[in-house]
Length: 307
Ligand SMILES: Nc1nc2c(ncn2[C@@H]2O[C@H](COP(=O)(O)OP(=O)(O)OP(=O)(O)O)[C@@H](O)[C@H]2O)c(=O)[nH]1
Figure 1 (cartoon, rainbow, N blue to C red):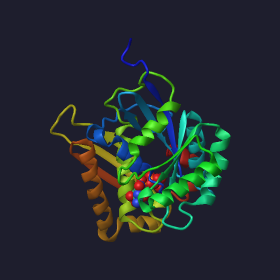
Figure 2: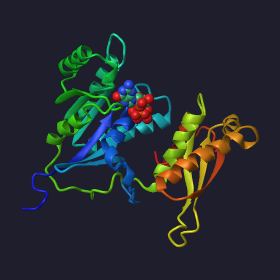
Figure 3: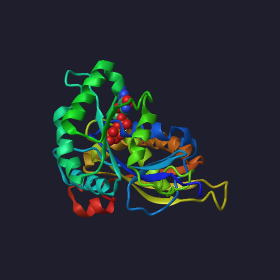
Figure 4: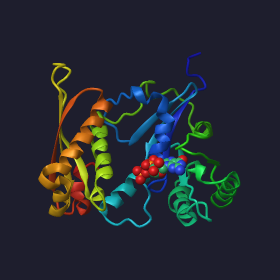
């Protein structure tokens, strides 16, 4: 008998509206191993965000961009296409429904549409997860789950709080029966297959979201132009990361740079600190701001940015 008899391994797509708590949930699931994240360079067609391991199963979580009911431009449409393709690759789908502190308990219209337009026709097993259950009383959670079961008929329905970590382990248990019996596809110390440069661009994007208001973050794309690993040959040399922050208009460029470059300097500092923490080594980070008019509406540009 091999070690992996009775082992299951498969893909779980997480789908839901923006802000449902996907990242929080993934971080929570992978938490105990985040300190040994070892993203390796590997070309992959699948958008794998996190790989969960335990003794009985390996769940490869596929993240999807938040579902928007009314796509506003080509970037949104490209994101929805990614979601559609990701769903096709999944063995099981986690429909993440954020609870709200309102009489309706969750956005019923949106959730109905999510199931109708996205899930029913894909014919994949669905585990409906009511997230942010810390916002509701026990009775309200029960009521919301009963409603979800009756109207949407998922294979399973459960409530959890990704933020507080309650019932997160139950989700693993709920997903396991829908995974094929298979050996693990990835070794245990791999938490993601995305390359380091992907995480670096995500860190800069996150800092832009934190630092700038209004439309700036949404009009911005971060492109890593150069990622020169110099430390392996000579440990006294820092890695060099050159990146472009692409915006749509000159006015946005001025805001990003700020008075005498102060805003860009602040962005660079915050990004570098976090990148160094993530890579566990010092880096030189250079950020350039470029204007590419209407990049979110241009097919060729979207493609070159990986959409
Ligand atoms: N109260 C509460 N808040 C939560 C919970 N999970 C996530 N949040 C909050 O919800 C917000 C959005 O969480 P994210 O994890 O960024 O959501 P996301 O789905 O990844 O968002 P997108 O990047 O827009 O797709 C954050 O402010 C989280 O702290 C939860 O269980 N309870």
